[in-house]
Image (spheres, rainbow, N blue to C red):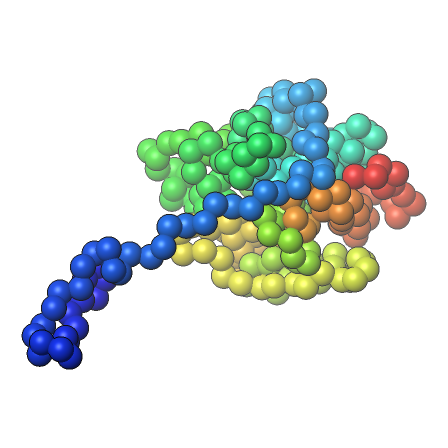
Length: 271
Ligand SMILES: [Zn+2]
């Protein structure tokens, strides 16, 4: 029974209809005030990209190696990862082997960030991290996020290893998310092991309302060797989230052989 239900009146011995006002839940409490200790980065100079796709930066080494990608700002108010990519681009980190893509996924949502209403810029039209399904990408469905997925999918279709940077609304310990494949869980575990303390690695099958980027068939199929994991770096707007995001980026690039473990991406930035 949902809005109304019947119950026995002990006084009158009659059936009484419970009214709507008796069964509605109390009004939802407003969200608490969040401390924006980490300001949004200035990403204005990274809008255009360098490979024909806005917000996408692609670099190639002369020596062979995997195509490695780091994505940030899937959700517009999760800009700790944006700080990390800004650092890598500002310090001109380049692959010594293979190819490197640094990709700001949803700069339009990020541009809407308002510190007075910091929860309202997660997306423009819909959650971009529920759209990574080939049939949906090929469909007529359209939205800002859907169009953006279509724009960047050709890049991601050639990626061998992906790190997707996110953060969380409520204060919580950082964690890694992996799809159900062993290859992706191993990637998350290897990245976690280099942090102190090592974040928890959670392996799950995703959401019923649509696949995440880490569930995209290229990364979630055992028919490919491509792997992906997602970092939840901590609370969105705390400096520690940006520090961890950059540290994990450095570990990721070193483990993939993209850069040497000599501090090429050195986390000299406080964020
Ligand atoms: Zn997110």
